[in-house]
Amino acid sequence: MTKDFLCLSDWSLEDLEKIIALGKELKAKQKEGTPHKLLEGQTLGMLFEKSSTRTRVSFEVGMFQLGGHALFLASGNTQMGRGEPIKDTARVMARYCDGIMIRTYSQQAVEEFAENCFVPVINGLTDMYHPCQVMADLMTVSEHKENYKELKYCWIGDGNNMANSWINAAAIFGFELRVATPKGYEAHPDVIARAEKAGAKLIFTNDPKEAAAGSDVLNTDVWASMGQEAEQAEREKTFVGFQINNELVKLADPECVVMHCLPAHRDEEISDEVIEGPHSIIFDEAENRLHVQKAIMATLMAR
Ligand code: CP
Ligand code: NVA
Image 1: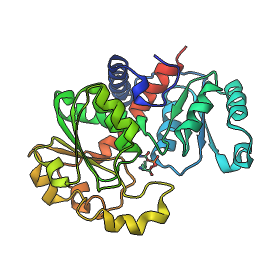
Image 2 (image 1 turned 180 degrees about the horizontal axis):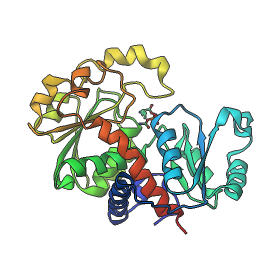
Image 3 (image 1 turned 60 degrees about the horizontal axis):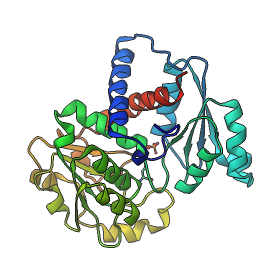
Image 4 (image 1 turned 135 degrees about the vertical axis):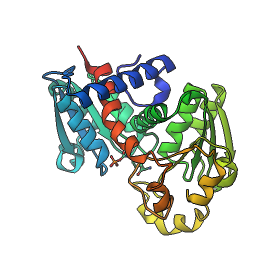
């Protein structure tokens, strides 16, 4: 087990399953009002270079429920935003905080931060990965479906940070993952190559219908991620046909579930009626960010 949570591939199946199980245990405790102050007196520093609703709120509330405290830092208001080197920021924050959650652009920056930080570092999203989200997603599927490791999953849309993390998860958890992206918007080639080498059951296509056919879990995300706003109009044209709507859902298994990490652009990558429809587990998915991240923090930070 590494000291950090930067990328799912740094972790074993056994350890990730333990985190999901702990997430469920902490969720039950929180629902019944049983105290679970596993991080009493500890502080999580949260450094954001990009916007957030779910990540910020779930980590902050999660630390409070674990008996600790979370500190929100928007990088623009820190010296890092004025050019203080990452390695200096990391070394200083480690001396005040018991753990750090960071959301930024480059995965290398998070890795550099972690290398220079002697307390655990958690990746709260980079351009490359969103590992906490995929942990929440898997926990959610496992609550709605038996044998969540044996289901057919599909990814429809952009080959972005979420798609990369799903490909990592497919390699670790062993499920089949169909990935439908437009040409030129594939997931990162290094991520695909590593997963294929590890024996992942991956199927790539440019046809969303092919990916959705018979799938148990349908998943998508925005067509233009944070930092790609200037490409929005061009992407809207390229991604036509990649919307998860009732027509696509009808091709999937009749008992399928639909996921989206949120925020969603309704009627763009996913139709409003699917978000609100009977197959959607999207708001359970959002809730589970809280529970699974509490398990991640407890696993990394508990003394
Ligand atoms: N899904 C997710 O990470 O949401 P936020 O950008 O609101 O944190
Ligand atoms: N792919 C999206 C996920 C947001 C939670 C982004 O990076 O903006």
